[in-house]
Image (cartoon, rainbow, N blue to C red):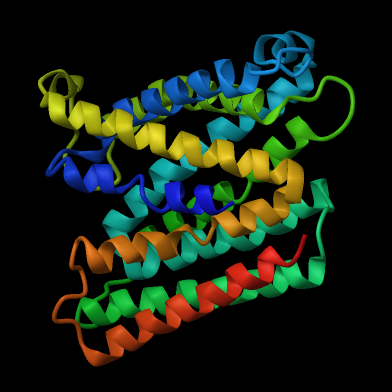
Length: 312
């Protein structure tokens, strides 16, 4: 779970390092990297001991419904992820982030717990409550950082809400694909199917948003072909990091309960904030109140991690 939090909170650094590249172009390499790493993990760690749980053996015995759950999860995640980036671009981090991630945390944890009722629900949802408070504190810190100049538009707010609902819906589907019973997938097999659906759906979702972006001018695929090799490498690397984190999340879910693992994974914004503070200097020269909100965010996230860790 700690590895998951580290990876989910760190992959976006590769986009920052890529410079002024449009996210729609960066996303092609990201989606490809997610799938490539899933395959590598499945054919190495996921096949290490052979037997029925080895990747290819597990895939051939999987039922259509289990594969369908994982594919639907990957498709939903992909749309949610693209909408989240658009929402941040329209409404800003202070609005889009708490609405989308907060909704995803609450909805995803509740739905996943209904599928896999593992762990202490009182501890789990107490931890979720602390994480929601941490997300709100994080948003207030970014609001202060912007000098309070946060424009709330209905369009940005609705995109954030839709993104959050979708983002909270993929975890119960992956849990259903791996739930005990006939034809279930292993975490590695589920990840491959999930990321394959992510890659395939990119040809629909990303092409659409390249032609009709949520913000900015349309962008052509020619821009991708003319891109610098460095940001192609960074896009692939971002996908590798996210895929490793998701593999860790699914593996942890088999041991600790999928709802617990998902809720813990949503502490990733704390790691992202650490990058922002100590590497990207986002809060350099920030007001005292912004720093206080940021400190509160770390305290509540720390409490959330401690409580959720004791839920299994």
